[in-house]
Amino acid sequence: MSSPGSVHRADELIDGWEAAWSARDPGAFAPLCTADVHYEDPFTPEPLEGGRALGAHAERLWDAFPDARLEPTGERLWNRRFLAAPCKVLGTHRGELGGLPPTGRFVVAHAVFYCELDDGRLHRVRGFCDRWDLAVQLGLLPARGTLSERALLALRGFGFRVGRR
Image (cartoon, rainbow, N blue to C red; front, side, top):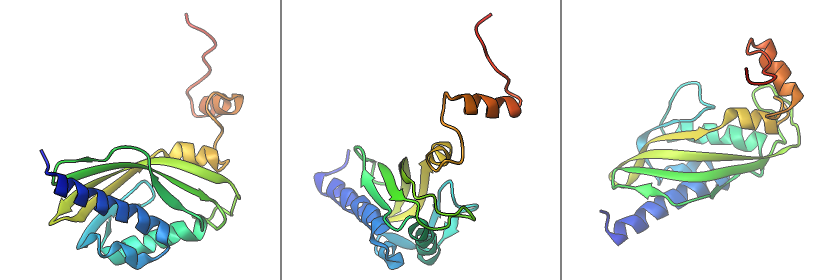
C-alpha cells in the first residue's frame, strides 16, 4: 500500500505529464522524465529514447492538432513502481499528419499511459489508444455498423453475415 504523500507525488507527476502534452513546449517533459526515458505509442514506428525525441514527437502532434490537449478520464492506478493513467486526447486536425491534409475534424481519443517509474520520474512510458476509431473520426475509415464498413470488410475477405444459420 502506498502512503498518502507518495500518492500525491504520483498524481503530481501524471498531472505534469498531461500538462506537458498540452503545453506546446517540447522541454516540458524533461523535469518529469529520466534522461533516458523510453516512450512508445501507436504512432511511433519504434520506441523513442530520450526527452528530445519525445519532445519532437509531441511537436508533430501539435503541428497537426494545434489545440491538442490531454484530460484525465479516471482514477490513476499506482504501486510505487508502475503507474497507469487513463485520459483522453482532444484536438482539431488543422495541419498535415503523415501526408494526410487537414480535415478540420475535431477528434477525441481515449488513451491509457502505462508508466514505469525510476526514482520518482517517468522512465518507460507506453501509450495505448484505438487507431481505428481515430481513423473513423478523421473520415478515413467508415463508421462501425454502416454499409460502408460491411463493404470494406467484404473486400478484405470477411464476407457478409446476413443471419444465423
